[in-house]
Length: 454
Image (cartoon, rainbow, N blue to C red):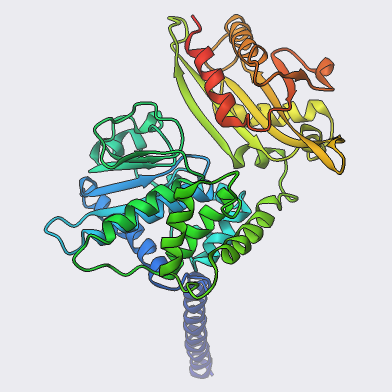
């Protein structure tokens, strides 16, 4: 009887072991499948981008970061910055691959990965280029394996695209090249190429340089259609499909050269640009699911400003660009009231460690300027904090400095917002009918005023 009982137990244990083993095997399969994502990008461009990211991480781990060039746009993370960085990194790595000194280059997006999809047009354009979902082909700033200030000194160098100067944390890096369609502020005068030109899209400048150098090679490298499509997408949305009011001869000439190499070459350029602009433009406007915090951070650019003040030598400025009115933004808060807007705004600027913030909003008035058309206006919201780098008295002074700079600008010609009488201390909202006075216009005004504060 005892023998039978032992046998039963042993058989049971064996069976249990077999079952557990089978379950373990099943679990391994499940764990493996969990990471075999079906949405991995296809094509040479996606594969190249993913491998560059991998090789950069590998070389960093082997203390070989000094062999790498990081190509980076601005922290706003728009399609122009993303495309410019990817295109130039691709060109650097491919144009030098058959030389004695091949270049290791990777595009760096200075936007955290969880913020990229706050711009729906990015997601759509990257899907056009058959890139992996969740931006797994792209190196984002939150994926850097080391503190930026430390890493920047180890690199071979950086290239700036769609930005005239490096962010302060990259100030110790060796700047190899700059491509920008904004104002030249004098950074890295010895960089080469160093291109500043007024065009609709920085991608235009990068693509032109790429094509010029490519055509000088003894043998051209492979130019994937996905990359070409991304270039045309960025130019299309920035130029309103090569609209003469927003673009110039250079944008069109470069678009033609890119188009001639694409799979669309049998079609008409304008037809394709219209389609891209319409599809991407519709996606760009699809912000219905975004709350106020996401609206603030989706297109947020920040800068440190050095002042003559011995009390506070550095002030941190933040600028948001939001394509809907302040009233509409208020509706996207939990309580749908003005106090809630400032509470959400305060939480975000505290997280971003911002002393002075300016939010630029766009909307249309209900009263038509011309019969059948509504007047487009902008709203400017100024807020100054007193709890990060400045105290209460300094915050009052800085608010007055920024306030005066905005109010006294003749081109802005601001008027108090309809709810201005309900605003709190160091808060102000204006409206302006200057349609061209975007963040690119207002930010330098405020920065100049703060620089002179003492």
